[in-house]
Amino acid sequence: MKKAKRSERAVPQIDPDEILPEYDFSRARPNKYAPRYQKGALVVTLDPEVAQVFQTAEDVNQTLRLLARIIRAGRDRRSNKTPGA
Image 1 (cartoon, helix red, strand yellow):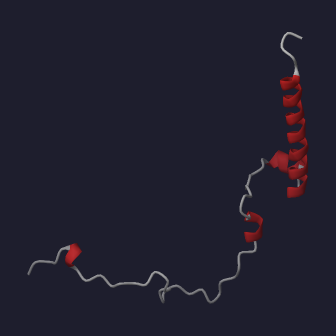
Image 2: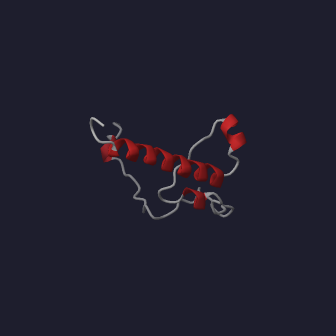
Image 3: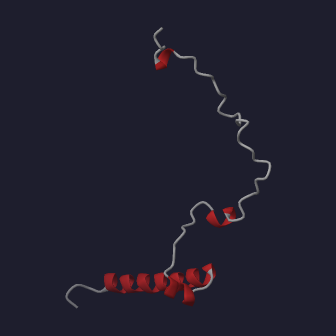
């Protein structure tokens, strides 16, 4: 007897919202790191020598904010120079 083609075989219909019995989430815990990955947050891996200097996220963010202000100020000064002066 010929095997039925794959498209002709009976395929059980599974509700996508239904969790299959082989998945057991009874021991699952909420992700304790989830709040860190808020919408718009960016995760960056620091090299070990940089991580020794900046030990907290606040240290990194404070320094980067200061650096961003310095960069913007330099750009503003250059763009405000009059040509030929």
